[in-house]
Each structure stands twice: as C-alpha cells, then as structure tokens.
Amino acid sequence: MLILRELIGGARRYADLRAALPGIATNLLADRLRELEDAGLVDRTELPPPIARTVYTLSATGWRKVPPVVQAIATFGLDLVDPDETAITPLNGFLAGVLLAFDCSTRLSASYRVNVDDRRFEFAVHDGGLTAAQGSPDVTVTATAADLIAARLAPAAAERKAALRRVRFDGDAVAVKEMRVAFRLSADPGLDAWAVRSN
Image (cartoon, rainbow, N blue to C red; front, side, top):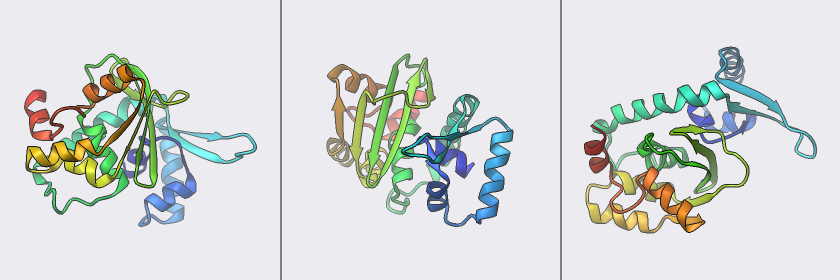
C-alpha cells in the first residue's frame, strides 16, 4: 500500500521509491513492484532519450482503485490524529492538505501540479475520479507541508485560514476557483467541517 500511495503523486523512478521508503529492502521493493504490475495496478514505462529511464505509475485500474482506499484509510484515522504530533512530510502534506478532501461529485477535467517543499505531485481529475496527469497543469499549487497540514488539522479556524492564505495557486482564475472548490481549499478548509458535509 505504501508504494501505491507514493504513486498517487505521479510517475516515480525506482530510486525515488527507495528514497521515499527507506525501511524497505531493495529486493523486497523489486518484488512488490513486480507483484503490483502482475496485479494490473502499476505500469512500468521506459522513457526515451535524453531522459532514458524507467518510471513506475499507477495503471488505469490503479487510479480507479487506489485513491478511494487511501482516502478511506486516512479518513478512518482522523480521530487519532494529533495536529501537533503529525509527521510533517511532503507526502503527508499532499495527502492531508489536498487528496483527503477531494469531492468525488465534481465533474472537472483538469490536470494539477502540487509542489510541497522539495517534492512535486502531479495528477488529474476526470469525471469525478483522480487519474494520471495529462500534459501541462491547469493549476499549480505551491505550499509547505506544514501549511497544508495546518489548513486541515489546526484546532482553530483562524489558524486554518492563516495557513491556507500562505498557499499559492497559479493558473487560470476559473480553473483555480474550480480546484479550490473540488478540494475544499477555500474559506475554512478544516476537516471538521468537511466531515460533517460528507456524512
């Protein structure tokens, strides 16, 4: 599941996955990737020169099946989260600040890039589902992991709003507005309000 969670953020080289999952042995990572390929959840692609490298991505089936599972696990764990002790990492910032609050009722078709600290996450939305990024992003979001996590989990509304104001959105004004609505990144983005609406 950890490998699949990493691939929600876009194509990753083997070295990227090793760096993101330092506790996993090299042979075990290779075995898991083969198993995920065999299961049809992950695609392996050879990029042409001058890049000339192998990257791993979620397959079409992976994009259909994995994001809802990650969202469900994250939602299940919300009651156990202490905002002051939550690990501040780019991946956690992306998951908590963006992915977790995605409204699957949206009918957007757009690609997004989210720059969190020193990491880039790319994905798209099409017909209410998350999928692989397509071409240049319609909206680019730049933020720190700390601000994305605070925007969702800080106990006070004023703290959440202050963190959100530090998040930068670049792109067409309409596309930015649609993204902020679809991912609940406008007004008060805290998950308390989101949880009430989603029940």
